[in-house]
Image (cartoon, rainbow, N blue to C red):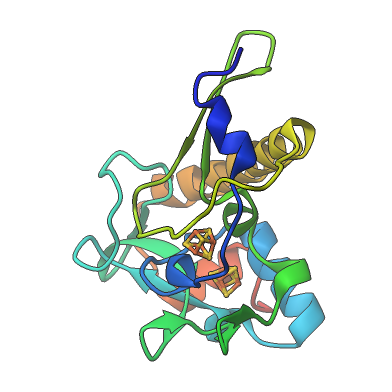
Length: 181
Ligand code: SF4
Ligand code: SF4
């Protein structure tokens, strides 16, 4: 029995609030995937947000130490919403960051890796219905994918942060291999 089992009936109404009200943190793999398919540069896709702009714990492993201060890499916004949102539709749906795929679910797994608890993020007003049918298997696969991608990216952030010299946004993107040296 999963705690929060009712959320397996979650049904997204497509209100678009989660693409407007929050900044989506991204990893180097997310950015590379979007670059390859859209032809946009990394600098066009991302922005670096400070603690006054993004709500996340100071202990978040995504904090990058830069010359300008600590920053989190997230999708660049346009007119207050994700730049990829057009007419309340995601224009890069097949390429979207893994965080967008997992949103709005929070999963707690047991020691065997099975879903123990399911809840829905409260970061934005999510106007969902409970008349759908979510696949536990799909939720778990997306969560595992996100964990793997995060582990790789946080390893890179750690490596960058160990450097004594603090770099610029461009130097960081170059370090990630998203801009040619
Ligand atoms: S990439 Fe797509 S799903 Fe993710 S925030 Fe932007 S518009 Fe929404
Ligand atoms: S806020 Fe909730 S209901 Fe609205 S688009 Fe996002 S996930 Fe769907």
